[in-house]
Image (cartoon, rainbow, N blue to C red; front, top):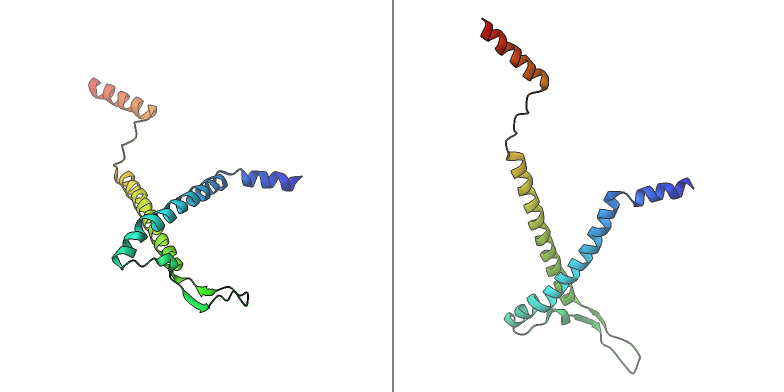
Length: 136
């Protein structure tokens, strides 16, 4: 029974839940980036390069042979190029987020500290000092 209790405490820790949320959001963000690369970035690049579609680029090792019942064996390096572009976009977005967070932290650190308010004892001592000065 102790094992289940420990596991429940581990699973319900804030950092584990935050990680799970991050993974789900990261997966959704990955789909957005995939669509952006495939549907928005790669078509203009293909147009600039003379209609080359990177996703269909491949090096065929063995041709498909229907008579023999073999399928094509190929290295699809075009898809690899798309994945590299997706990675660079995700890395750049993460860089921008971290840069923004770091700049906010620097602003917080640069803010001057307000001197703490005097304690009750300090206020009382100041009053006693002032009374003694006024009597002299």
